[in-house]
Image (cartoon, rainbow, N blue to C red):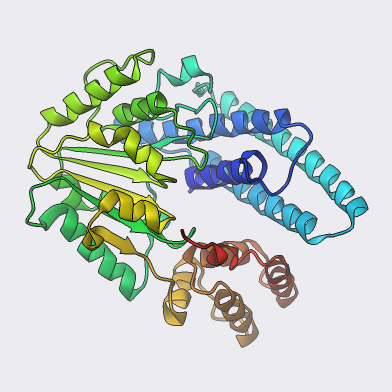
Length: 410
């Protein structure tokens, strides 16, 4: 959860402030980039903690990971609130005050991130740096020089891959069939398409860690594409090579040309019996055009699993509608089931608590990520009606619970 929270926070900062279509402009982007640098270092620590646990059986220091998780969740909530206030306020004078307040808040966030890094260093844990040289030494922490972070072979916690709903079960079953049991030995590209927060990545996580899937493929690789993919094919290929599981035996030369990296990736995948590649959050067809020739089609059941927001991207890549899965919104019962997975109402609570919770869940309009936001907010507040009503008012006034349902897919 700590890694997911940090990834979400960094994506929010990139999207809201640094993306070409950002909603709010800041006079100076240097503090933001400095903050992203610190957040990347925290993310590197979290990933290394999990990698050490997996590789050597070392115990995970949950207290540190929980500190980082809570920090990231708190900061993202604060940013969303301040951004909404700025966008809703029409008076330019007051907007200036809010911009100043946001700028100061981001400075404070950077200080808190610095304090967390000091705590980690105090525990004598070497951090992976975010410079290109340092990043090249570790496959799980290569930071893009521009456009965000490519996340490789993530570690999944059980709470991150909870799924509910008849249609989720349906898509899980049939997508697994396409990956493992479908009769065709040709290379197949399966694309999952849907609104932000609908559960595309969650579905892929379930499949990626499914025992039947893991045992079926000789090599698995996963990368998450940043929202601002800028056509840096060299970096993308390096990430693909470094995310391959089992670990690639050949040395990866960061200075290699695009042609050399393509040849190395193609050669390595051709050696294996069967591979599964996951490309999460593919933003456009350009990315697919850049790399699809690297994936050999040797008639041995190779599979590529892709998620995207856009129908036209899905149709361009998968070609056959049979391998395009469009995820629906949850119905009322499924929405409440998901909320109940994340948060259990105490027996001693009055019906008023349940009424508030159901009102908020209904406002999410079947969007899983928003339902999780509601559950996480309520789990952090005191069990008093006053506090719950305060949370209800804040979430409803911000309108963030159903914001993602308003995205239109191309």
